[in-house]
Image (cartoon, rainbow, N blue to C red; front, side):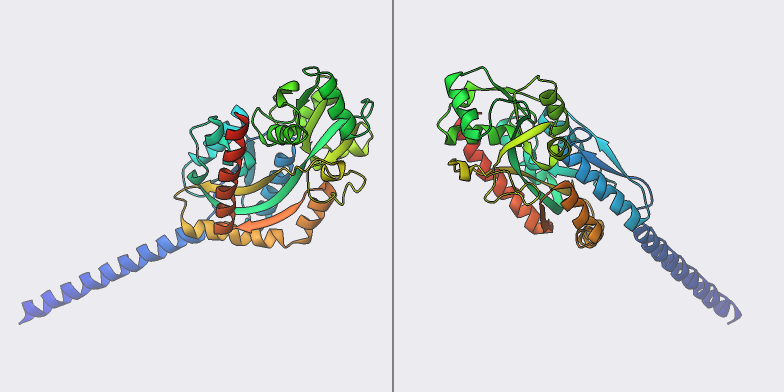
Amino acid sequence: MGKMRSLQGAVAVAVVVLLLFAATSAWAAGAEEEVYPDRTVTVVVPWAEGGGTDRVARFWADEYERAMDNPFVVENRTGGSGAVGHTAGATAQPDGYTVTMVTFELATFESMDLADLRYDEYDYLFQMNEDAAGVIVRDDAPWETVEELLNDIEANPGELSFSGTAVGGVWDLARVGMLLEAGIDPDDTTWIPSEGAAPAITDLLGGHVDVITTSLPEAQSQLEAGELRALAVMSDERNPTFPDVPTLQEEGIDWVAGTWRGFAVPVGTPDEIKQELIAVGEEIAASDAFAEFMEDAGFGIRVRTGDEFAEFVESEHYTWQEVIEEVGF
C-alpha cells in the first residue's frame, strides 16, 4: 500500500513538472512574439539616395523607429532599373526584419522583361503616396511651354535627350506616353538612363540632358531656387504646391501618368507582424508630422492598406502591361 502511495505521489509530481514546463514554454513563446522587433529592421530602397522615394522612405523609417523603439535603417540597393532592390527585398527572409519601399516599377518588371520578379512575390502593407510626372527643363532652356518643346522635337528628331530614371521606369514610360499622345515617335528623343531622380537632376543642371520627366516634388528645391523650370505636370489637376504649372491636358495633350510608393514584405511574413506594421503605419499616416512632411515636400498623399494596396498593384500590372506591349518595349 505504501509503495502504491509513493508511486501515485511520483506520478503527481511528474504531472506538475510537465504542466509547469508547458506553461513556461507557452509563456516564453508568447514573450518572443511580444518583443517584435528586437533588432534592426532594414528598409530597402531600390533607388538612389536623395530622390523622392528615398526621402519618403527615410521619413517613414524614422517614424517607425520612434513608434516601435527599434532601429529602422534605410539601405539603398540601386541598379537594374530598380530590379536589384526590389528583388533583394522580395527574396529576404520573411521574418519582418526586411521591409521594402516598393514603387511603380514593380508592376512592370515582368512585362518589360527586366527581372524574374512578379508583383505577387510581395505581401503589401501600406501605400502612402502617389505623384504625377512633370516635364522639367533648366531655367535657361529655350522653351517656355510644352508645345514649344514638342515642336522642337518634331523639327529636330534625335537631337534632344530626356532622363529621370532607368529605361522603362515610370518617368520613361511617362515620356513615351506623352510623345505618343502628341503624335511624336518616342524614338525622336534619346532616353539617358539614371538610377533615380536625384542623379537625373544633377545631369540636367550639368547640361548632360535637355529635359527630365520626374515628379515636381523631387525637384522642388531646384524649382524654388530658380535653377529649373517645370513646363507641365501629367495629372488631372494642378499640384497645389506648384499652382503655376499647367497640366498636360491644359496644353492640349490628354495624358496622365505618375508613380506611387509603399511598404511591402516578402511573401510568408507572419500575419501578426504584418498587422503590427500596418497598425503603426496607420497611426503615422494620421499624424500631423506626416501631413506636414508631405505638404512641405509637395508629395501627394494616397493611403491604401493590405488587400486594397495589393489589388491596386495587380491592376497597375495589367494596365501597364497593355501599354508596354503596345509601344513595343
